[in-house]
Image (cartoon, rainbow, N blue to C red; front, side, top):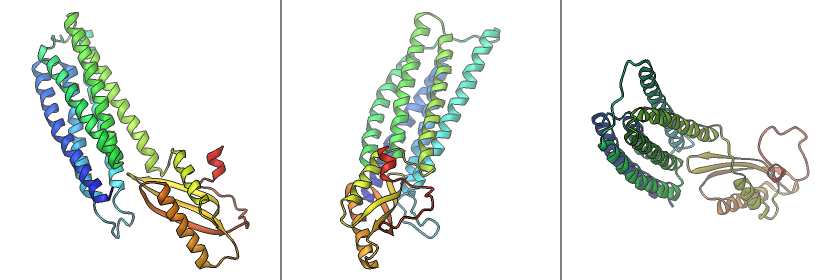
Length: 314
């Protein structure tokens, strides 16, 4: 898939997400307030963060389409990662705010300074409707995210899947509250929902932290890299390999060894063949930097970075 079509699909996914989340958010907040349901209001706050996420993903879809320039010679792909990082903090903050609200309400109930009203049946209806719509949205984001290789859209799909679980827990809390005539379960559910929201934000942050630190936890990519190098005649001992991710793209650096008696032109030709072999073996490669060393003449200076085949096979 070329970059133009990818960006177009990312924008479509962002628009679908935005429209769907605005409808869900408004419905939850209005019905939650009317129905005296703290857990539904909390679910609505979570949906408000989804609206912010959708707006940000839409804005980022225009930024990542820009060509590289003097200030950004690597291009603008990392804007996707930065947006996802901001979203992780938004999710954590929203969860913390709900935790404070629900926790404060439970403390006041314990002190006897406030009474929690029984949630209205409308709270149950809007929650069931929300689950159905969110399932469709999550499926849409997952399919487009996988097709485009967009971590940002895939993160959004994961967030929406979490929303379905959250809404299901809210529904369970509402059902228990109405069945046992104990509205305090609604506030308890809101407290549990807040913990789940914060957990999701922390997990997303940890996942993005790997990319921001130029890390890569996928050993299969390194195996494919070494297989590609070893398929080229004249290329030996691939080492100091580094793969870093820029949104859906991969930036690769590695050293290879060639015959010490070979001319610069011949060595360059082998490096070009290695680059082509890597791009054929691994998808979404942004750039490959191959450094050539003389075969058999080892540098005894300890190499402080990069991986070799023995690191992956161990």
